[in-house]
Image 1 (spheres, rainbow, N blue to C red):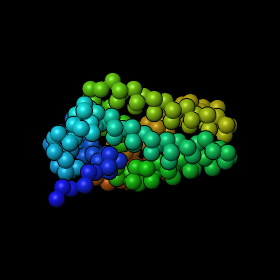
Image 2 (cartoon, helix red, strand yellow):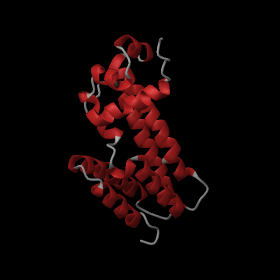
Image 3 (spheres, rainbow, N blue to C red):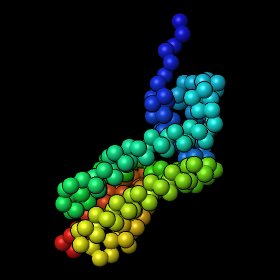
Image 4 (cartoon, helix red, strand yellow):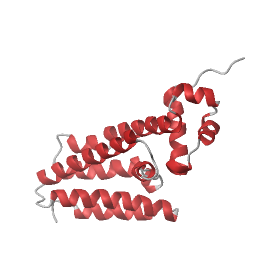
Length: 185
C-alpha cells in the first residue's frame, strides 16, 4: 500500500529543522530527503528549484511566523511600553528562549539566492521600522539608534547562545533590552 502524501506545510516544518541545524551551506538535498522521508523526485515535485527553492519556502514560512508572532506586537493599540515588552516576550518564544539559531544568520551567510537576500532585507527593515516607530511613540529621541542596537543585540545574543550551546547570552540580551528600552530610562 502506498504511503499517503505529506502536506507541504509539514515538509516545510521538517526542512526548517534541517536548515536550523546545518545552516544554508551545510544543508544538502540528501539531508532534506532524510528528514522529510521524501525521495529526490518528490522533493523536486514540491520544490522544483531544489535546495534554493526549499530554503525560500522555509524562509517565507519563518518570516510569516515572525510577522504574526513578533512584529504584530508592535502594531497593536496598546501603549508603547506594553508593545515593547510583548515584542521581547514574543521574540524569546519565537527563538525558543535562545535555543534556536536565527534565520538571519542561517540565510545571510552562504545563501546564493537573490530572493532569500531580498526577503531577509525586507523582514529586517520591517522589524526596524516598526520598532523605531514604537520607540519614538514611547518618547525615545534616539529611536532609530536604539532599534538598530536592539536587533543587533537580539541577533548577537542568538549567535553567542548557539556558539556556546547555552541560551544564557540571548536571555541576557533580552534582559538588557528590557532595561534599555524602558520608557522610564
